[in-house]
Image 1 (cartoon, rainbow over the protein chains, first blue to last red):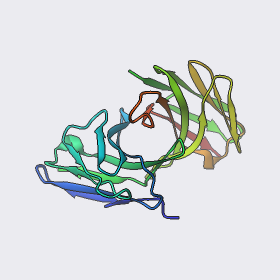
Image 2 (image 1 turned 60 degrees about the horizontal axis):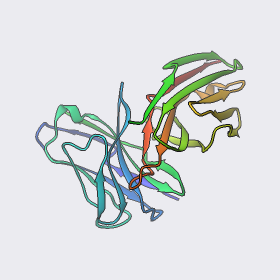
Image 3 (image 1 turned 60 degrees about the vertical axis):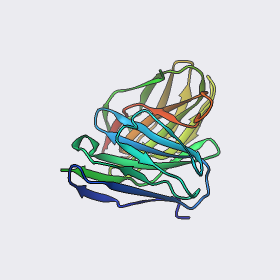
Length: 110
Length: 113
């Protein structure tokens, strides 16, 4: 059971470049989320999706774009990366009332 | 605004030395309180969900309890493999997107052999 797969796991990019983090789930869960985790802030919600073609903003959405054309995929795009977006990004999905997380994508913006 | 505060930020225990981690919260209407374990370089791993005051859940050396204002994660006779960061999160009744969680900053537990 693969669960949630995130790619790339590690990425270094330059300021101003566009970056897309991919998230794929094998369970066909309806709800999916993107969180970022930073020292001193904990996990913060960026965007979530209730189903294909339905997305909404979380706590820290500025600078990010999401799409969800298929239930199993929920990519997160940084349109023009900034150093403040250096972080660990976690994709997650809901089964029952429990949120399950992927292994994370480490992004460094230089 | 939902808020979650975990204490202490870090805790060092000798193997076998029992202790508790605290999670205090304010939420408009609690749908559930969640505990996760996170190992370095990994995503959070689900441990427990508690739904109402007085509820308790156990898993191996861990027991989670819930009151109307806080939750405790009790660790009995910990082993070095229990070393991790423990995250607490609340889920509120808020209509659309109500599955989303608000997290605390975590407690980093180190168990010394």
